[in-house]
Image (cartoon, rainbow, N blue to C red):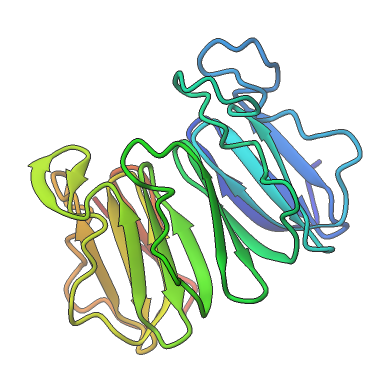
Length: 247
């Protein structure tokens, strides 16, 4: 009976759906909170949560941006023991307001504010919450397993966390090493260990881990209007309503 859905998000083991009336539905792992993998309450939507404008799903946690610019979070990381997966990723920073969008990584969270700045919290094992100083004019964000992406108003991408270098060993496989010639970007997506960027001309760029072909963008792919990155795979939605997948 789930209907009137306007957007969706998928975590590692759970799904979220936003209805047109501003309420959420959730299913999958975490409908209880046993504290035993994978049940950390990530599908237990907080009672009374309404006026939701956007949503995001991490590995074991969920985020919801309300229309008033505040953020709700639940699932793993409501405490911060520092023991996986409890890294404080669901502990929304005090006083965080004017949020326009959120992104949920493996064990960390990002919030984009109306003034173009970004807030980050949660696990920082690989520097994924070490946001570059002075980062402003951000219009979109994405969070991978251990890395973060920010799209600036001028069409450039900034990345940090795992993969700033490419050692060839997980998790440092270049997912944060943005290609130097990448410009005119209009959207970004972050997967397990790779990243995607959609350019204004409808083409796609990909970088990072490629052991499963997830960064081998199909030749001739064009007219793309949206991209999404899974753990080891990539998706592109074309203007004609068809989907292309690789990885």
